[in-house]
Image 1: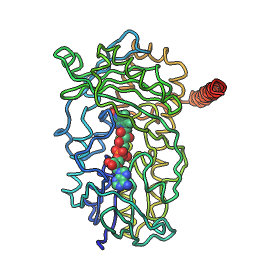
Image 2 (image 1 turned 60 degrees about the vertical axis):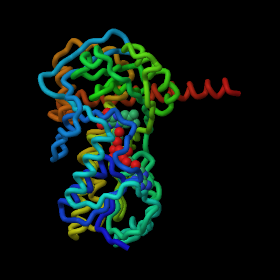
Image 3 (image 1 turned 180 degrees about the vertical axis):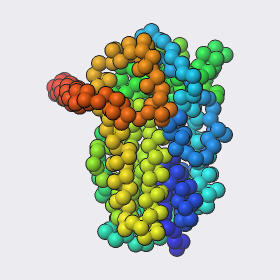
Image 4 (image 1 turned 30 degrees about the vertical axis):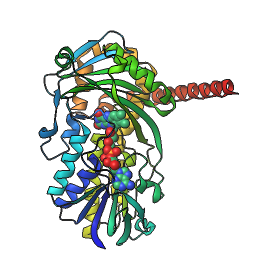
Length: 406
Ligand SMILES: Cc1cc2nc3c(=O)[nH]c(=O)nc-3n(C[C@H](O)[C@H](O)[C@H](O)COP(=O)(O)OP(=O)(O)OC[C@H]3O[C@@H](n4cnc5c(N)ncnc54)[C@H](O)[C@@H]3O)c2cc1C
């Protein structure tokens, strides 16, 4: 039975980041993924500048477009474009990005087994004093001191080890549209964002090398609207329903602050920990960030500096969750009444530039809170009211549906 210091289950952006940094730090690492690579994953493939900045490797071999602006619409109405003098985000395809990141982890010394799923974990691995324990895959059995669950939304590691990370669930649906000569030039360096038309989410048009990715996301309870909304968005931009190919959907888990993401020798990262940014729906940024924090803590456990992985949870709460909590509040406030914010996006350079600096990583949500000073109290209040109103509407909608079904 082969022995490792750390096993990382899942080779998405979170897992490959953790595996590469651990291997670079001298650990014996096994990176597993149940799928054969290259594999696709439902995702818009937008990597913001702030996300890319967390990688200390060159992503340019897998970048298909560099985005400098946004084409905004409010509920699929009139469009307006805003441009920035520098890049805002990169467009890739997950089949390419994830294979590339897993290769870099392997190059750094991690053993990468694709097409091998984690199946069973010795529950003692999350005990108070973690020691080497057995995990089983569908091919073999291994021992490890630390297990990092990077196995995505609804991953096995969190479920099996009773971490019971609590999520608020969002869902998204996307498809691809082939370019025509006109659309390729029209979307050369802008993304389309349609705001205000989805419960808690938005619609997007993301340009890739040989196609456009179109998608919509919202809270799970409004999931039944995804399909009609995706086709409405496609038609709005002149793409016939029949031209939207490869429809695929997936969950976007949003962590309830304070819920468990580490215990003993086990930690969950990325989507497995629910670290999606609620306002932007962006998950790659926090997948990189949490993969990095988990690798740092695992190296401390291996060197005897830390007794277990609990320092990882504390670091996420301190460095990432504080950001995500503000994002969650802004999401409630924005979706309560989008028109005034869209008007500001159109007319106020300050507002637009703040948005650009945020996705470039030059400002953070906490910087925004510092900038508004005592108005923070108003923000807390308004976000609370907006959330209560939304939940009230959802409850009455569900009651009406139940009454209609009776
Ligand atoms: C439709 C849609 C569009 C999105 N668009 C964007 C976007 O444009 N930009 C952005 O930043 N975020 C986007 N997101 C969010 C983003 O895709 C995720 O947040 C991100 O993939 C999380 O990365 P991860 O490494 O945590 O998990 P994943 O990328 O989900 O990787 C998990 C991996 O674990 C593997 N796995 C699962 N179970 C096992 C097992 N038992 N054993 C071994 N391996 C296992 C899976 O095969 C998978 O490869 C989008 C999400 C959706 C649903």
